[in-house]
Image 1 (cartoon, rainbow, N blue to C red):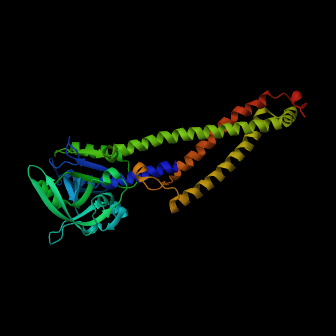
Image 2 (cartoon, rainbow, N blue to C red):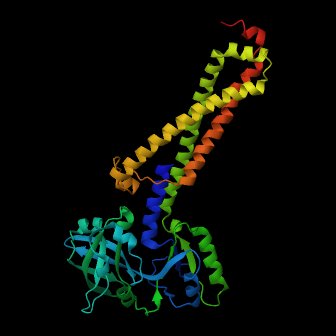
Image 3 (cartoon, one colour):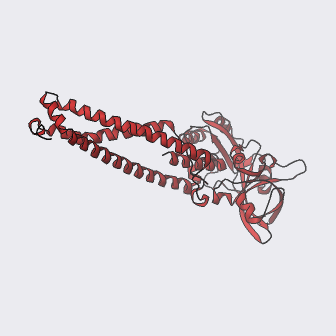
Length: 369
């Protein structure tokens, strides 16, 4: 579960780093639209920004284009962001350059940030000039300066997503300063994205201004989150098999213990001890073994988790797993719940062999040597 939670956390952070946990956009169109802008000055946006659980909101604008370098051509999706944009995710995955240089300077130089995969594909490095072609009824050409290269390890997105100043995209799209493709919403840690999306939708519907749709990050990148759901199923099957094996071993161990102590059971019954009291003796002894084994197992697991988190001992193929090493993330309440759940399940399984005690006859068991 620690590995599964690690995958969920890492991939969730990457996906929301690209787009925010929630996106508000024009009804019935894709969030990457360059044809149907929304107004960024609606009054309800100020109310949304003040809602509990909201970290920040800011506009974005998209425009598709074509990068050409030598004989290499690559279609890209250019995302324009303003100075309020939360760069923390891209700062964490920045390989070269800086995110602070992306905005247009007084000389009119337009900064641009591309992925490491795209840079290697086209042979670009930080400081190079990049020409991008925007094809509509007429072909528009813009010159940009490469100011940063990021490596988020999400191949499909990395190959196409380019970041620049939102003013450049607005100019290309012919939009006003208050128009954008949509509004990104960043949530505070621990905020329920589904619940927050519903609250925002209700607030928008109650407003007399134009409506915007709210899309969650898992709806924007379904291939990533569907893959995580498959991992959930695998984890459940694995846990079931582990509990089944552990339960079988404990039942076998208790049966062996009962057979070895059958004479003692007969003596205790002959002395007048009730079956329930004898049950307790064997159950308590078995549970002591279970708890001791679980403590040792947890200590070993925490050591392995620490080593993997610190040294990335087990590596992965980024193209298949979206991360370069096995991620580890401990959710302590879940860890405690699984440990207690395992103890309860095994305790109930141990009641099966312990029922053998009631069938032991004192006169017959005392004859056993």
